[in-house]
Length: 202
Image 1 (cartoon, rainbow, N blue to C red):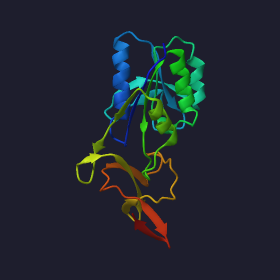
Image 2: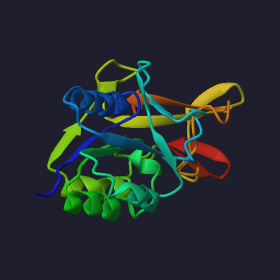
Image 3: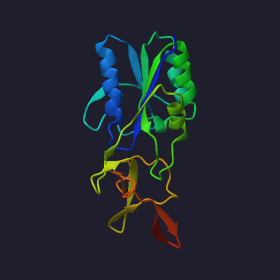
């Protein structure tokens, strides 16, 4: 019997890792055996744990690329989980399919959109093959409505302004004190476009 795929997506601060942990704990209570994978490029946590913003955490295996998880394909695992899927490479969907074909359930959590409002291709490919998709929302830090977007802000001349479209897609919060993120609704989410050395907000 093939495994199933469950994925939790949404903006930052929506509880994606918390949802992954909840699903893993539920399986652990049922005496199921599994493994959580995190990517080595996510340096926010220095140890081998996945940690939610609520403070819950579980032990994880740090890998450098998606295909490294396949080393554990024959370990008779009931499930595997991938946290922060947007940081994984394009092979993630193939790796997920490999576990599914082997009969292992797969749990995935990650951002569906980057700070520009564009989908992460590898995450969307997993969504397309998922048996269950959970779209989580956060609370907009401007108006308090449901937030479906992630706002990247940069510090410029002492003021926090929307990041430019020319900014790199990945810029981890905490590695640069001049960058921070906020959950926003569509109306309050903005992206900057640099033109003639002035920032236009669209």
